[in-house]
Image (tube, rainbow, N blue to C red):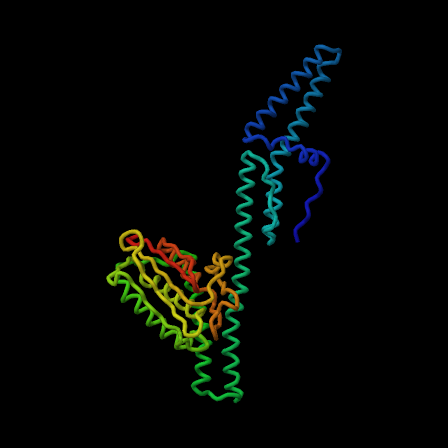
Length: 362
């Protein structure tokens, strides 16, 4: 538990109320005015001593006392931000990241206070993200493990036979668990910057056709609780000889995740279109994935690429498990590695995700 600091004394309260150092843009200027003030006071007292019958020793004592008081006030004003930062640092060491230091001054200590508050805000965001990540991963892992355990317990207890249908249900849960672990590993590698790009030039049409073929096979082997054979995948590449320069494996992750997300949100007998065009620049690429689902409300578009964000329950297609909420986050990271952009574009119907890759060696 953090110890509460003692209440400030009368002198400290007076100084905090006046805050005479706030207008200064430099600590050196404040110290200069301290010297000037001390000299002025001493000179004034010496002048009073010569003009009156007061002894020089008494005036000297009074001038020393006045200089010490002024120096004490100024020293307190200079060190108060450091004392406040020390108290906040101790609170942060004990897990309290919500405290901040006052940053009203314009000198070096004010700049330090601003930087300190930015650091505290970043640490608070990292701590919040860590807690959310642990909670979300625990929840996502619990669901397929619970489903797999239920299936196996039914087989062991004799409630259900180990027939192909039961084994397919267990396989679906195992594949979902493996998919989640693989995506978490991908995100971990991307976060730590250990995923190099192996960019090369390739023809877009046969490449995307192969990705769509794999996606259609994946949709029929347990990536969803039920097979979405009713969704039609359409490829549109113009010109047909279009070429691009990118990391084929990372781009595969982008397209596969976008297609899987579009299929999941498609209505019965819907259509998913993958459109490829030349963007600005040689060997650049503009990809669009369009579906006929309910679309994404404008207020939620900035959050769709966040981790574990799966949208509202009304945005999923029939029999959808909602996914893990990591596919679009992985797609965004892979596009960022290429120096490209990804976002939700305007569409009269459904959802349209647009990806642009600059092309050329990086």
